Image (cartoon, rainbow, N blue to C red; front, side, top):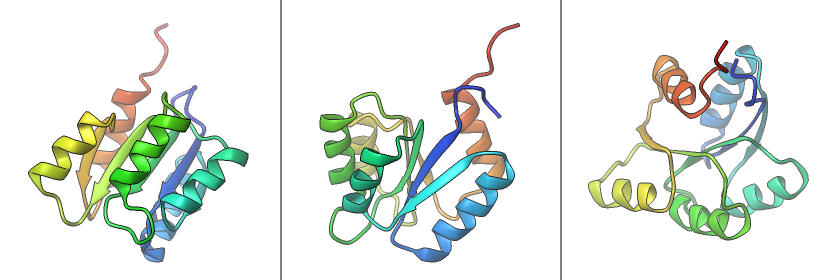
Amino acid sequence: MAEQLKRILVVDDEENTRIALTRLLSREGYEVNTAANGLEALSSLRNNPAELIITDLNMPEMNGLTFLRELNREYPTSNVIMITAFGEVESYLEALNLGAFEYLNKPLRLEELRKVMGKMFPPPAT
């Protein structure tokens, strides 16, 4: 586990995705909180800051891109991985332009997620 990464917020309107990611990441040693949409996520972050946010693109009430815009206003140094089952070039480019570190397609593969997290939070040099 990267030393500086302990808390992760998973934002997805699909309960099964939230449960699966929570189980996977908890087994990896992370503290995981969840939210069903961007509004819930912003509320959660006020009380439970996270070093990494994994958010879905397509959600009701506040989609992933709108959430990313709000994050930039309230938490400009947020580390974000955008996930989606409906990847398109336009949303990919917009997410990266808004500061997402990576844009991954569902279903997520644990090894792919580990690799991206390792790039975001490299282990300290010894």
